[in-house]
Length: 403
Image (cartoon, rainbow, N blue to C red):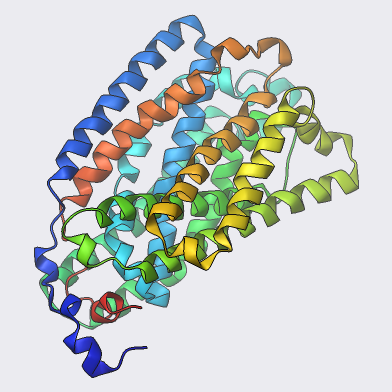
């Protein structure tokens, strides 16, 4: 740990955070992102006409994936506010910008409303469900709860972002306490909303199946997606002025440790759910896994086990790798790809085998590309609006001097 005198002498400490504006390359990246989004959207439109059922399935995967990054970033932001860790101060503006895309994700949910009756059995087979479950999983019920979830998430997002912007203008120590008063209850409320959202978005694809661990499984998943994206974006900024003078191996080391923790958390939730259901051996529970480890789906499950957990886990045990941005970004990129594969594995086998056609699986890549291009364009626009470091944060000098 550096002494106070050494930290004060550190040239990084003398950087004016107000001058840390986003590099000009952000505009070029926005153009590339929007171009990718347009290409993906064109492919999706073609897919809508050749296989409309796959349009909605793949769109669900893409929407949940990118919404998960925004939601996970909001959760990490609140955790950072409560812990005040140096890792979070250095990456806070990326998390804030990602969280501010949530209003647009609410708008992008509209296609799923239009395809509700094709996606969810509860929309057209209510007679096979109990009256209460049919009402709960109906379109009005799902949309009504969606509005409540997003109202909570948007309140947390814009309250915390407003206080952060206010902190840039005035060095008021009370702002930290005000942020904590929002984040402290916000974390468990956020978790409850994500838990119930997992039922509406994914578990309802097979309304006769249920799992009490599915909600926390999604919580671990979005956290893993968010920290992986934070690493990916931070490495991109680290390669350019002015953040190449700010971000250090110690910051990436902290983020790598967080990704390792979320990788183990995701694996723990995944295996626990599998073990409990397989040990119980109840027909109404094990059918979900039987559909996903039968035939060719067993190979997809094996790929997930190896590349979503085993390989990243072993790689992230290395201290040197976690401190090397060029190597760590490869693990983060792999993790984001595997998050899409995992969602594909959760969604597609839930539909009747006679409606599964491998020739249409390309749409599961087109949808994340389309939504992701638009999301990145919006995210980068938000990132440009504020300095890349939180001005006047009392923990900023410590974060910049972090070794």
